[in-house]
Length: 171
Image (cartoon, rainbow, N blue to C red; front, side, top):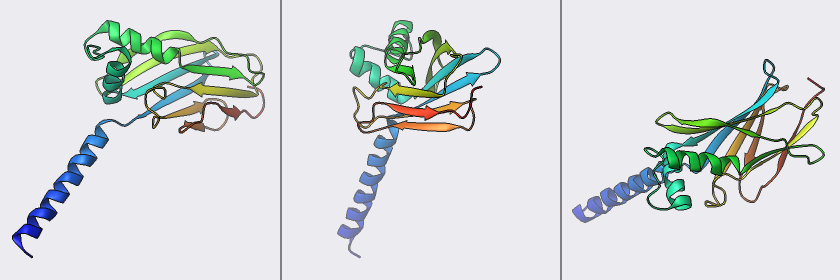
């Protein structure tokens, strides 16, 4: 094999590695847990965002000076942004009033917390999660529903706006 071909293969491999590294930097995905807590009788919601995604998102949403790592103001703004883009509805399309609980940064992830009281009767629930999907069409938001029968997972991708879960029996 000629030196030219070896260099070309080495360059191609380096470019592929660099492209995959850049792509891996931003995940464009988030995971949320909706937990039916039997002790408190609340529905507790925990949204987990990759810190790299959150860093890029706040600059896109709030401007180039936004700093989710070091600015309490930016952290609050991002938390408020998430709170305004996540909804739970009863089967008859009545919104469940979600309260802000708080947020935290643990280095690798940024967490946003919400909660609401469990309705006395809830056979179905409709979920909407638009966080970051308004700025990144490829954003995928996964929701795990726990504590009410078997674990159920909802995935918001492409043009999906509303998904629902059905619970077996009253708890």
